Image (spheres, rainbow over the protein chains, first blue to last red):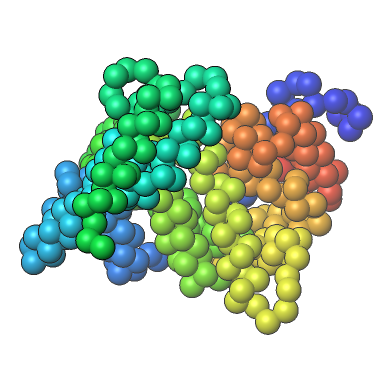
Length: 150
Length: 190
């Protein structure tokens, strides 16, 4: 039998039965596996394979649930409050909490720049942003000034 | 996938694929059947690499723990032995290196693994073992996978992650060496 023949034939890759038996005898080694080893592996399998609880929240201790819910409500309320826009007077264009000459200056500046003016600059509520809104703000500021104690 | 009988009393007749499907569904009994079906082969293979029973048992546990962590969602795309072989080999090498004081090379591990395991071996088997010690690690590995573990050539290629042609070449060269060696040529004579 030529050693240079490529292993194209499956027959070249077969071994006689005696040789196979000798292979198996040489490799044979009975390894005793203690029951403790089996049990440890099977226990790991039970933990890994059993389906989890439907709700992870169900694993929480009951005494944690109500405080957690109360805390969540408090956080939501705080966020809502922070995001709610403060109530400003219509004439308070610069949103500094008071109506004064600075608001009329702001509007006058916007009118001078021109272009599309936002609706919140409509100080007198007539649907148009123009010089009349400047007058409305000025009047309001004067009126407020008179109301303040001297 | 073919059915196998395990070393314990074979109770579960499901194929490996069916057992894995059961495991994906949370059936730990399916794992139990699969475990006992392949336990002894894994242990034997681990001993082949480590030559140490204690280490082989450690590797047995690590192998199946590694396997379990793939669930749920594991898909078996080859024979179980093809999947397990590289796992057992790599864990065995790691276990052996950890256990020894000095670094061991893979070739050293293979030589150790091929030492005669029992005094009661027949002379023929002892001679064969001695000749095999002179083969390359790769050739020994292919011989054992083919004729001891019963893997097909394609399964060996998949397990060792080498081309099928390489498997054939190694097997051919190994058998040729055995055929030429005076100590083992009698196996090939009718």
